[in-house]
Image (cartoon, rainbow, N blue to C red; front, side, top):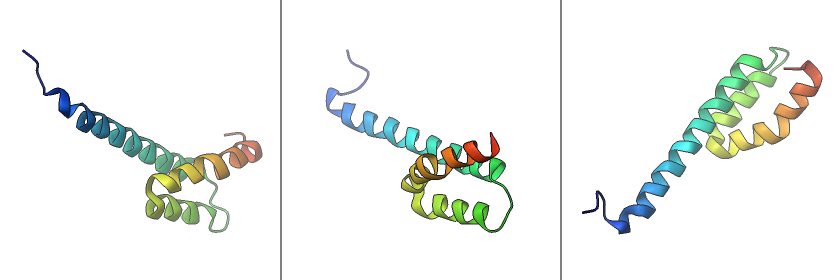
Length: 75
């Protein structure tokens, strides 16, 4: 006897995929809030991009801003 219907595998996979995106989004939001410098409006701008852009905004932050910040500040 199976614990779930094999047809539900797609729903389970979608749920796990969605949970991973939410965890990634929260990770990038926290990293931006903690590590971005308070100079100008950089921090506020990136937080808004991540909040409004959801996981796409988080991906933008990870691949556009995060490497530059690490090179500039070392963290």
